[in-house]
Amino acid sequence: MSPSHTPSRAEAPLRLDLFVVTRILDSLEGSLKPICPTKLQRASGLNYTRLSRYLKLLARAGLVGLEVDEQAGGRVWMTERGKDALGILRSGVRILGEIQGGATLDETADRALADLAAGLEARVATSALSWPRA
Image 1 (cartoon, rainbow, N blue to C red):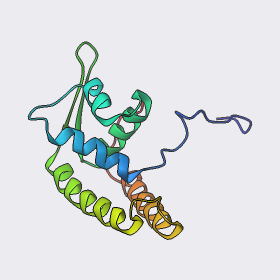
Image 2 (image 1 turned 120 degrees about the horizontal axis):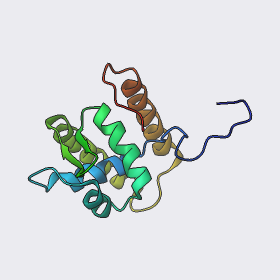
Image 3 (image 1 turned 90 degrees about the vertical axis):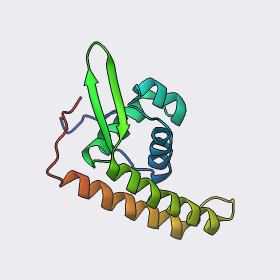
Image 4 (image 1 turned 180 degrees about the vertical axis):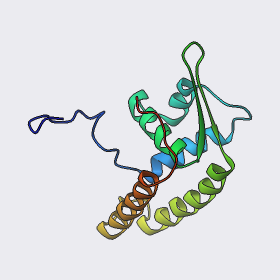
């Protein structure tokens, strides 16, 4: 990247949203077998680019399995670690819902979520797991 190059949205670092992670894992939970990313996209309400970026991050963290097949598309499933994480995330979402009382998050809760997201991103970045970049 040259100094004058401004990264596109697809190149920019992913700003992790734990509510989105919960929504993706929730969408996978009801499936008894791996599902195609398009079905997951519809279930989660995310656009394809954003879902793809999250799936790569979640796969590196070991929360989902991701199989890419040039002809068949791909398949996504939730791992046991993902099931454990979903339980924790649901508790966090419930608690945050109680804190916010149906309104938007206040600055303190917003900062706490950002710190938690940054910690997860740092942990995944230093993980021994690698994932091919698109």
